[in-house]
Length: 385
Image (cartoon, rainbow, N blue to C red; front, side):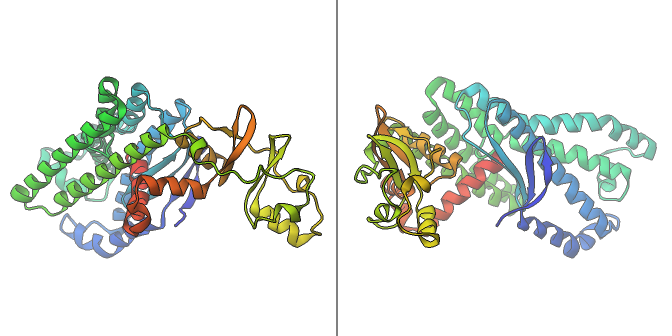
């Protein structure tokens, strides 16, 4: 589901996912009982509590996003959802220093916010006459300036500490991977960092279940183990795609069509995207949807040059499938011409890309759960940035 736009900051769209409404539903249904145990906090204060916590999440994501933009990464938007924030970005740099800076930027913003608010928190505590940890705990959920200030401090510090745990998909796991990548390579560094994070999550989950009798913490540990495994699978596929050349998977489509041929002629092989060539050189693309629209709206004797897209960018046979996939995504196109020394050699389409993925992971095409896991993996990578 698409998020609702809340506005933009520094050119980055801020969106609210519909699942976020569940948080407010919890406040309306359960907060009064929850608050009564701590001094009768009203529902409006529960809403304020949620807003302050998610403001810390938003600040965290902007830390990642603005640092990523500093390194030339495209940042599309930031979405707040039921389980946190997601900064949707383009491919991140693989340089260890850049990855560490981007991963550390989120927690650093939270720490900076907490440090800036601490003097106000101390002043408010002194003026209110509060003393001791127990007294502060009782004040935390009572409506007032003191509780607001304390929520800002604690939520930012907690978010920073949790994200610096060296376990995927947390920021600390990415920092550990970047440090290892400088020594043993990014792919192997990911393996070590993922395994370390999974072991750490399992130990903490078991300890929480045995000593704290907590069900929530073991579930969080299981979530981290699952997410880390998806990250590892994603990185392995990425490195395989980097090694595969697009020329191996391009399809020869009878050499394309000439710009001087008719649209009806271009349609002779059935509705499809067709490369427009002249003397073996790519001069444009005739997109399937435009071709069908043009034939439906006008006479079939119109020429290809009247409907073709001349702005298409070609790739070479030696480009990696990984790079080509991202170029297609950035251009929002589902096909791209493939050339060799400037001469047209074939077309690479989204169908061919799906074929490559099926070859790399046969269970992907047989098991809908795998496809769901891949979608979850994309979401988790954004959530962890």
